[in-house]
Amino acid sequence: MNTQTTTLTPPAVEISGISKSFGEHLAVHPLNLEIGENEFFSILGPSGCGKTTLMRMITGFETPSSGRVHLGGVDVTNVSTRHRDLNMLFQSYALFPHLSVFENVAFELRVRKVPKAEASQRAQEALELVKLSHLGDRKPDQLSGGQRQRVALARAVVSGPKVVLLDEPLGALDQQLRKEMQYELKRMQREVGITFIYVTHDQEEALTMSDRIAVMSDGVVQQVASPEDIYNQPETRFVAGFIGSCNLIDVTVPAGESGQQVTVNAEDIGALVGVLAEGVSHEQRGTLLLRPERIDVSRTGDGLRGTVETLTFLGEEWHVHLRVGSEIIKISLSSLVRERDLPGLVEGEELVLSWRPQDARIVIR
Ligand SMILES: Nc1ncnc2c1ncn2[C@@H]1O[C@H](COP(=O)(O)OP(=O)(O)OP(=O)(O)O)[C@@H](O)[C@H]1O
Ligand SMILES: [Mg+2]
Image (cartoon, rainbow, N blue to C red; front, side):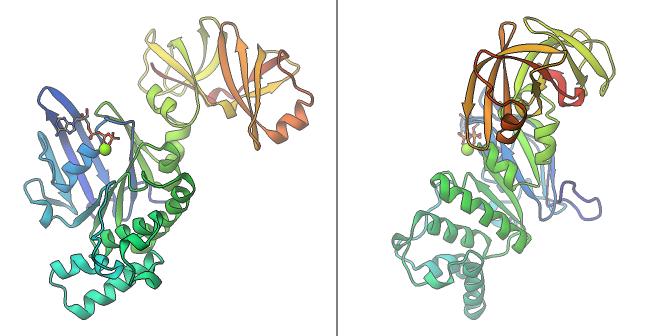
């Protein structure tokens, strides 16, 4: 997995001190980012957080208010989009309705004056990549939504750019097709070896496809890390709450070094064990982060006690809402654990909770 950029070759994309204001509104706060060659890099965040604006600054469609953009080690800040070695696939991509699938894909090569025979061969290869070579003669309106999406993808990669930026490319597809296309896209990216910068507000999509993810909120990049680290080691309350389900418990940060095991007293719950994440300081308002699937429950033993308020069956797992003091703690139990260790569990029952200290991180609120 390409979770780190190498220092030998320059990064495919390097952003330093990039920011964007629209009048008074700072849409993207000054930010540094390095994206490696052949990396599948996702920008994840809620609507309006600045994802598209950041993409548009990389492509050159938007002029940054500050900072520089380098592509492959070359400063392109003042270079027009046309002369940057990249392609962008917009959410509302448009195919030419009067051209065949094949012609749609070959179009850019024609514009670039690639010799006809070579253009045909490359367009054919791009169609093979997206598994549509048998439909080259069709018109776009004779294709399904997913097939049209594939044509747009073939068109984005056919000229062999170093970087392809994709802004919510699967947004218009239904859930089933979206899942299929996620795997397709990832396979394709590996095959062509192009750097993909992928914008989405779907956390599952980002987790399954990316080498690394940048999580954004309100124009600020909160964390850049591998999917696993984003999920297991969130650095902020926002990241933990945005990605997956998480119990977010208000605490006052106790004294200690980062990484140290501590016990905190949470109002209305009681004493909780956890570890201090980096960047928190004593007495600050903090959040204890605890994933529902990291909590063990049993019928006996010592520890924090709670009462089962709701018990919901979801097939492979059960969701339990446990009332502890005046708070609700979310727990997920695999169906196996539920049947094996807690047979006959009913709402209203009292359970004992426990977790490994390292699974409860204390971050800034
Ligand atoms: N041309 C513009 N003029 C003024 N404000 C703008 C302009 N473009 C974007 N904004 C504002 O900047 C912020 C970031 O917008 P942006 O389009 O980057 O968000 P986004 O993360 O892509 O959202 P979405 O997920 O909805 O596409 C928003 O508050 C938006 O209203
Ligand atoms: Mg957008």
